[in-house]
Image (cartoon, rainbow, N blue to C red; front, side, top):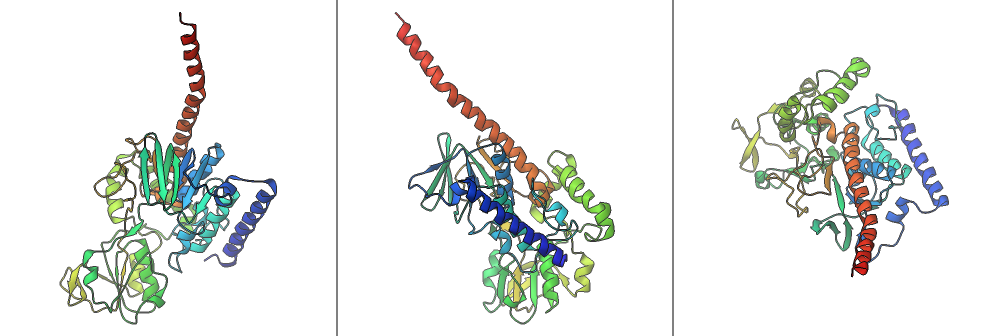
Length: 423
């Protein structure tokens, strides 16, 4: 969808990024140069702020920190900015139109009501990091976060980074979640989690059981149904009551749902949002582009939940045993924050925070979490608001610390003068 216009827009982003990089090289070292070009010292590297995560959340935070002149680094486990998008299934397109897919300071370069492909989103993020000279350090996978006194210590293999403030800018879906009984399935059944699914060629001939009925599951089910029989297990999450690519959506409904309902009504600041938040986090949001009738028309058969395994085959809650050759688990993710060795996670592994600020750990923040503040918090168009708020707190605390450091020598000098003047 969008075809040549999207390609032209993405090409523009690449060219703009290349031109900016060339200009930066002519003008001298930038923040990005410090992160990727300068030799890394053997000891700990110290910054005012360390941002963990180089996706849209980390880049959004970085944009606001850079605008205020802080010394920071963004640590990205991927080899290239945007790789978390490039690694997703081949046919993926964003569920939101391009007009809502830009980060602060840089609109997405595509016609407003087209739906960017995953690689186009990845290229946009890469161009964004280049345009604002964000100090992204690639290939740095953090495996430990601790605190020593007033300093947070971030370890990534042999690399150590220290800072008085750390922003964990990562979504709370890092580790694939599959039921324990998955290991009991016949080894001849191909099993993939949605994180590892790329295209139908990965699967064996024969039927597919798709477990999980959220947006990812529905999109993958539609694709697979063109090639083979597909069963879908999972509770109905509902769907938005209009076509996201229709005329009414372009005129009014998309903006109403994304910018008003998801962004301003369903928040932790409203009774409706507080009531909806637990269900959204545990079960996911409504289908945005795919409708239940689309699945039915494609021949996708809805079945009860998967309860276990019988004779190596998946057993459903109604007692049926499905003879399928493939199972695709669209069953969500664990938060994946076990590397945070601080008392900031609840019993389910989710961070305890208030709009991204951790009450018991001054200097530690989260951005990019699902429903961090609003339903839109994990969406491209919503992450910027959370990033701006957290960055404002970071900047305020950093300036206060600078002020204390500036006053400290004067105070010490005054005390010395008093001592020397004493009889």
